[in-house]
Length: 219
Image (cartoon, rainbow, N blue to C red; front, side):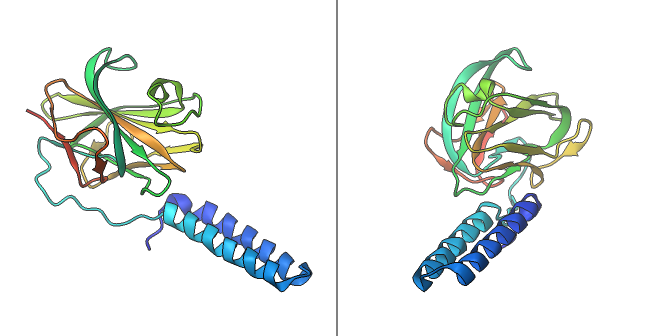
């Protein structure tokens, strides 16, 4: 299992804590069964943390021109025409991917283009599947422009458990499908705001896979 670099410190800290905890129970627990129970729980907890920070290889093998790939593993929870008031100030098609605790939490660049905007906004930590989390929660916003001038907005949103959003995008850099956009620690969601002319290839409640599932195409 490949581990994402964002998990190194957390995994190390959890490992040391569990090691000390089990040492205390081994030497001081009055019942050996209690020690074995704590040992089992520790193994399960460590496995869960390792699984959360897994970083499987994901390579999109198709034609990357004029398509939008899913920026994350998860479930489509929003698919509608909305007014995007933070950057575009116009109507856009919003597609939201909710990442459960068992999903891979790597976020991916969804189109070929250039980073023209990147910002971070503080906010609340409501459940990420709620509609208002897109504007109320802590979030990072990235805008990517295609060669023909079309732009999309990608928004990483913190959730009830998520307390750390990592964004690698830098203004001015060229970006490509198969590159990582960032990482959200411990569950959340990613929104994409597309032009109204985009052809949508997914539907509500559909399972999607980061850097693999085509969610839209540009006309």
